[in-house]
Length: 432
Image 1 (cartoon, rainbow, N blue to C red):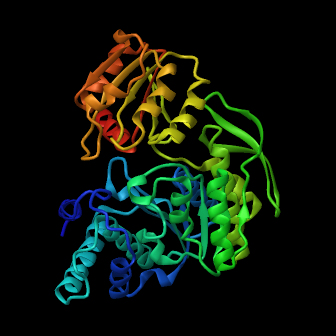
Image 2 (cartoon, rainbow, N blue to C red; image 1 turned 30 degrees about the vertical axis):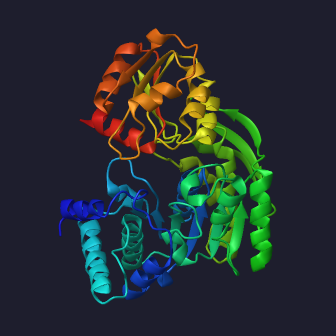
Image 3 (tube, helix red, strand yellow; image 1 turned 135 degrees about the horizontal axis):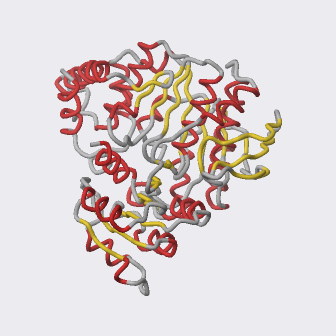
């Protein structure tokens, strides 16, 4: 099996959300048949609605500064599926990805043929097993796992990580996780188990109550992070400097590698997770934490490409993330052209109400994903009262970017947002 065949096989399993089957039985049987690779290293699992990916990459950067051999598993990818699996900062090679995919495919088929599985594991279950196999072979000491969806029944939860983190919880994926914040929080808080070290980021009261109840149930005392670091200033491109204080140490005048004030809360969680790992024997110094926070980078999240014109990529995929993007755009003095496309179930009207007042031009577009909102849905969600001449539609990413470039002066900025899948397609278009 070569790389293209591996990708084609995984895609044949169906879209990772639309064909998702929440539950741990399949992934546990699959991992058992593969020799339980996750038993060979320690793990951190990070769940939440917004910020879990950013927290994961900051923690990975801190561990890099501490020279810890580690694996990082995130989702989704922007351009290549290999982006999801990184070992000591490097993407898995296409050849290794294909090799591990072949092993998982054969193992899954044997389990189905033997009646141990009713059906093939899902796309995400396959990928989780591939990542864990890669980590075992590489001899990592630590795996950093971003939860795919929810927590209680997500494939990454089968690892039973010793350290878990919960970032901000908001409404998202209600069709799978529940209609209320409390219901969604219960799904995510279920990754907390007896014996785990738990870090909880800033939460709304309904979510925090559920999380604390889960901690009480399993006998865990969590570390609560309020995210209220002292902001000292920011660079011209939006990178904040701040003082962080924990029960263990003070981190003064820390320059964040990630853009946006909202990243302060995510960095606070990452620092607390690093301290929890240190308490478990990982040699993570105060200096490594400061160095790692400064060096962290996260593609597609307030990622700025120099122009002209400058292009800001941000996969803000729900109203809470759109508000964080708005806070950043309010500091931009140049005229902004908004290129917007999103999943049809993501609160389109609220997201556009948040973002469109800051845009001089708006380009609505769709992209190659079965869950993408149509142009008709996007158009219906645009707030009233905006100048119609400043709004246009494009039925492809290529056409949307050509339109945005034509409408944006060299000293302006194009902001591509609404979905990481859209960001990935735009990046692919611009690289050709």
